[in-house]
Image (cartoon, rainbow, N blue to C red; front, side, top):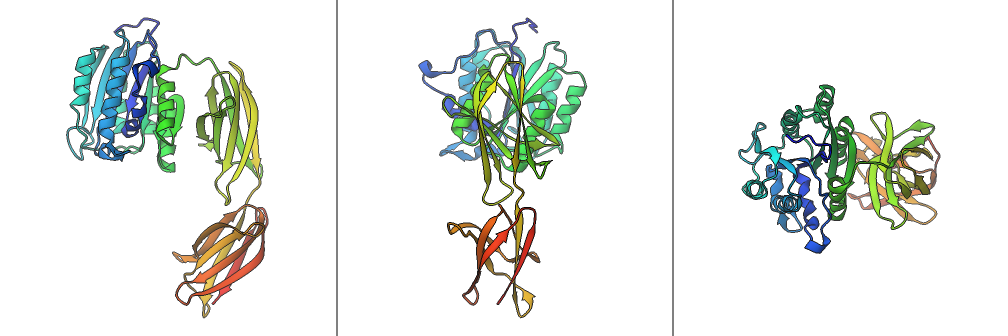
Length: 395
């Protein structure tokens, strides 16, 4: 194995979400530049059954193979490449993980042929694929970067995040970055934990364009020489989880997104030197609270800390009764100043009243009994910060 100092140390993990990288296949004159001195690259391709899902009318596995083929063709001849795939041979088998190309000098046509021969079938054993990758890298003295790209979470083993921590503690030198595409909150938390455990960054991608941008960044980015932005969000002087979005102030391009409080740690963004702004959103209340901070100057080698404080919301509980007994109606909450509807929900669900987390303000409610077509309205409901207001509406 060539251990020259010039090794780029990139390993790309293509899981289900990599399918949306297809916009990166551009005309020759538009292709993102590849460093000419790339070293180790390990691909892990998700070929599980979910890859037959459609994206813009095309199967994700088809798009993924096209994108990976394009990436292989664009790599310089001195790249060192390996390929691992999972879920491509058997349905329901968590051990369906196979090393298709042993890590070594790039053979483009051979590697492309293996990629094109894959067919999506089985499960998503992310942990076992990472473990096999680590096994192939443990003899290397230089640090390797692994980049996991996924639109979902592990379906075989319970704790991929714990596995990454274990592998780091064992002395294997690697950094793991993760790109999550269009994932749920639960899936995003697992993927973000994997990145944190691997000493890397989590990149969010909500659409194909963001996915392409994240992929370009992790594939072509040089060694990081920027600074850091540390963000903490507070409510009643206590940290809580909001959402922070960082934008390039020059062109308003969204750069990164993170939860501001995760596993009792604030969000930390690594950014190239420049001027940014951020939008921080509290989604725990309705309507969502948002604050914007502009002119954030990032300087190489320095950490800039920002704290954003939000007002604590209040709680409105609504119970509907008929003949003294709770029953299910529909409650609609409006902001009284502009008659804007904020939310609606059933007033009795699983033996619990309707509960609305609201920004302090004055509201009114309309409660509708669909059975009798009867409607009642209550106005001038002031919701104070940190307090719970309970209303019983009798039919």
